[in-house]
Figure 1 (tube, helix red, strand yellow):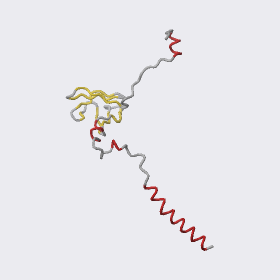
Figure 2: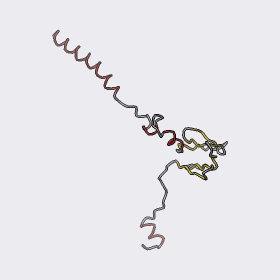
Figure 3: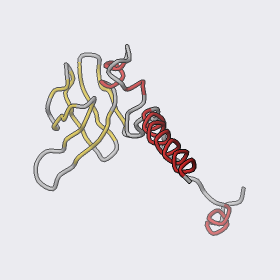
Figure 4: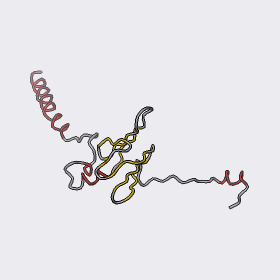
Length: 125
């Protein structure tokens, strides 16, 4: 009986030692990707060009979150001025001309006509 109790104590003690070590190997799921990390060489250049959020309050000027900075409509962001802000786009004007930043770069809306809609409108393929 004492032998079994000793084995159980050794087993439980070893589990208590091993489990915290295994938990330390897990990465933080809320951490941003390495490319956006401040340690990355091009992180500052990359972050400066990203429209992260748009806030359009009922009262007051709209605000864009660009590269981690809150920029109100009409304010300057570096050498560029925020001249237009919509729910999905920020337009900056600067020495290099006009630059458009999108919340979802690379995604464009296109209208798709289904065969049923074509039949209703009388258009034939």
